[in-house]
Length: 197
Image 1 (cartoon, rainbow, N blue to C red):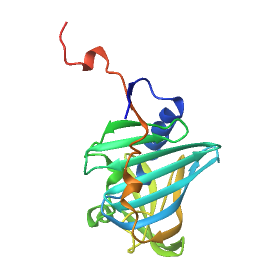
Image 2 (cartoon, rainbow, N blue to C red; image 1 turned 180 degrees about the vertical axis):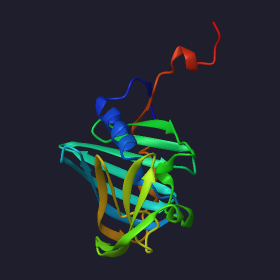
Image 3 (cartoon, rainbow, N blue to C red; image 1 turned 90 degrees about the vertical axis):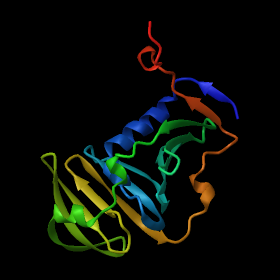
Image 4 (tube, rainbow, N blue to C red; image 1 turned 180 degrees about the horizontal axis):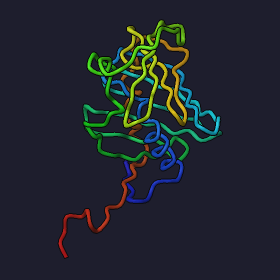
C-alpha cells in the first residue's frame, strides 16, 4: 500500500462537510445489524441518496452525487474513520472522536428529554415520533423499538430518512478500507507538529 501526503480531493472534502452537517443522521452505536437506503433532504429541496450499513458499532455510509460516490467507514473499535473514494482508488484516515454525538443511540435518557408527539409508520416500521429541543432548535425523531436509532429525522434546514430497511448480518469486509487503495494523509500544520521553533 502506497501512502501519500496530500490534500484530499474536493469530493472527499465535500463528503466530510456533508456528514458534519447531518451528524444526527448516523447516530447509532449498538444498533441491530441492518442495511437501508439513505435519503438526505436539504433546505434547498435537493435530495442526496445513498446507503447505510450497520454492524454493531461499525457503520458504512455511502453517498452518491451524480457519478461521484464517496464511502465513510466509522470504526470506533479502532478509533478511526476511513473516507474512501472508489473513483480515485484512495482513502483518507481520520481519528474517531468518542464523544461524537452522531453515534449516540436512542436511549431512555434521550427519551426522557423528548416530547412524544404520536405514532407513525416509517419504512414499514411502527415508530414513536418525538420532538427534542437541541440548542434552541426543535428536531423531530421517528423511533422504532426494532432498531435502536431514529429511522427519520427532521430539522429546520432538512432531514434524513432510511428506506427499504433490511435486517440481517452484514459481511465484515464491508467495514474495511480496501487494502489495494492508496492511503491519503492530511499534511500536518506547523502548529500541530509538536516541534518548537
